[in-house]
Length: 320
Image (cartoon, rainbow, N blue to C red; front, side, top):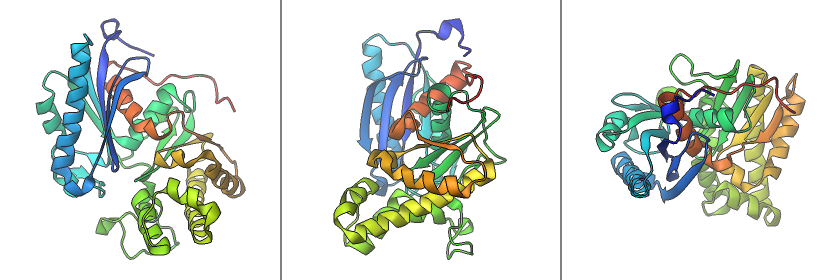
């Protein structure tokens, strides 16, 4: 780990803007968070309002920290999609989000902080690389299961961005081995819409008569045959997607995080079983260290990498 001497003791303001919730906190160079605050995203309000609400949440945390004497020098932001200077790509979950100039808006709101913005899943991957279940892993995958479905790819101990920053966007995969009615060219992500949070809610509404998230579906499954069948279908789809990813990337370990992890680790048994059968060299499948909060810790990892010259720690091999 490389941290300039004058950065030791300094802190970063961190902000995670997700499709379901907003989170802000203050983090230090040891990967610890404090003053963690949450608010609903309320995506239906539109992108402008969501960003305003996120900034207000972060400013509230910043005021509290500075009133307590904290030395905040940077802002790390993890958010959905690929943030460009004047627009956002691959972020369909919040209406109007694609048209926002997020870096400029944040720089104007936090004029005295070094601002870094990155994709939430790639940021979460960095957090697991710095402090979590991917420390020392040379070839690995961070799999995010939540409102969005995506992966962070680790090759040679480093996060892979891809030619356009879109490496690991598995939500755009085709699940049926054929053309889908709507695909990336139409602004659609077939796998995410079938297996992600909003897709699950929609399918539950159709099958069970009311929307519910994965945790609620898993709770209902033991008592309701239709819920059990739907849950099995969703987890089989996730398992097949994971197995295909493992076949392509040949990782040592797959770390699973995101909101679905809250529903219990038992659901990963189905994923592990199919991965073990389908993959020539099965990887370890394990739950992420940060579980559903990985993107918030990822915002801290982004800030440290850009502002404190933080590098990925290395060790010999992966301890199975």
